[in-house]
Length: 115
Ligand SMILES: [Zn+2]
Ligand SMILES: [Zn+2]
Image 1: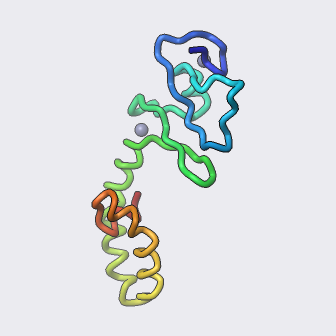
Image 2: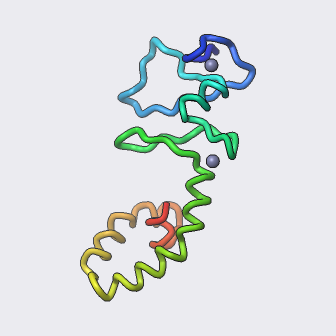
């Protein structure tokens, strides 16, 4: 298992996060930790490879997402309550868009929006 970027064989390999359209079978799907850090696809705080998100292929650490979601939760929850009385239609649309995630992960509307 060779690192795509430095061509060395690392002890610890990181799977490079890619969406289907980006996969090039002629290239290694792995990176070493130091190249992954350089590429911005590995979290230096949590020592975790990033996950990839559709449709733009942006990547992020799931623990960082969790951390930020927890930090935002109260603000978003308060905001939803305030906005509900001002623009009920838009809030209903926003909640409907997040309903699939809410159901599959068992999250509240505010936490789904934070994530
Ligand atoms: Zn490397
Ligand atoms: Zn992280």
